[in-house]
Length: 353
Ligand code: NAD
Ligand code: DAU
Image 1 (cartoon, rainbow, N blue to C red):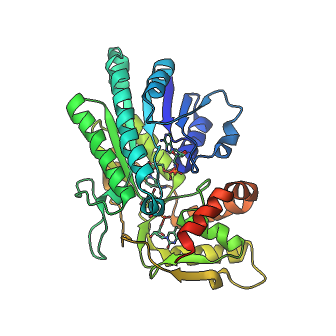
Image 2 (cartoon, rainbow, N blue to C red):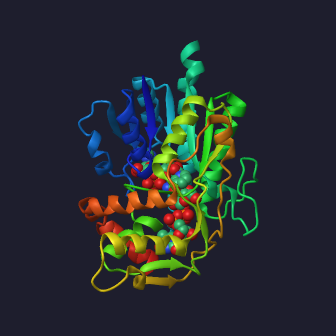
Image 3 (cartoon, helix red, strand yellow):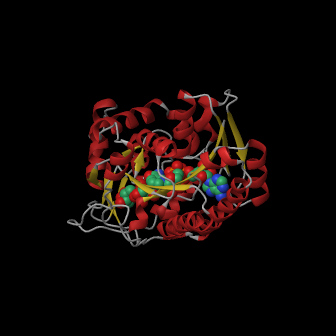
């Protein structure tokens, strides 16, 4: 048996593959373009494992996706590949349109052609899992109820608009062609192997090098934080037992304002790696806000709990402690990702703020 994962060298995809191969003997074909966000270092623990096969390439390359499907005959596709950073989508939306929308369209067409030729049992068992985001639902006010699966789509950034478009394509390919799809809409993930352009790894790695901890606006934007291992267990559950054509919201029941996240990280670092120059909070710096910055996201994850019995295992306290410890224990990984490209991005995003 085989599954095909797209974007498996990125943050969530690599955590998913590592978790998958730690508990089962099922082959994983990993189609990843290895953009700036894809990192084969994330997969070094399975480098010698013959069950992991990396295929470097683009989800938008129809010849390649047709060939991979015909050759490996997966029983499921788990689609993580995307351009994923909101700030980069503001600076340059083109790649987001190309990968998240056109690439997903190509993948759907390729998978549809493959699936329609499968024999009865294999065809019935086949699944396409589309990994999406809570950002498609837009921004909540302080008193608004958390996002349910029936919330209207109101994407506000080029990133979230491109993910919303991909969700609609996936839905239509089910409704029109019967493709057995399931979509997950998840809140902010954090954990090992996250590229330090996102808030939590940026703050940890900047603090350790004595750099400013940039907080957009007033720091009171709220996100619902989910440990990446919990996201991966939810996806496994949706793959195994989810209902075809359904969407499942996945969240951590962990709403927190950004300033509180940053202060928590500073306190953990003060304990685990005290800085002789003083508490890390001294490095906090309020900077110009992100254009169109969504104020609050919150996920109502009762459907996935009710139907599939899934709940997150980690609290924010346990998850963030593991995450900070991982970054402290893996300085070489951090060093290798902070290359010239990364420095160029930091300069582009932060120097004018
Ligand atoms: P990431 O940016 O860390 O990784 C994306 C991966 O996709 C990289 O390995 C990259 O090389 C690959 N990729 C990009 N374009 C590609 C293309 N055209 N063809 C093949 N591979 C390509 O992203 P992530 O944080 O791991 O997110 C994974 C998925 O989960 C995305 O679809 C994202 O929208 C979604 N998501 C992320 C979060 C989060 O908090 N990180 C939350 C909810 C949903
Ligand atoms: O909600 C799910 C989404 O979470 C995913 O779909 C995206 O792929 C993922 O990148 C993430 O989007 P956010 O924009 O919420 O994540 P980010 O880590 O970029 O920012 C988290 C919050 O922190 C947000 O309110 C902006 C703020 N922030 C971010 C950075 C990078 C800062 O205050 N300073 C920063 O330097």
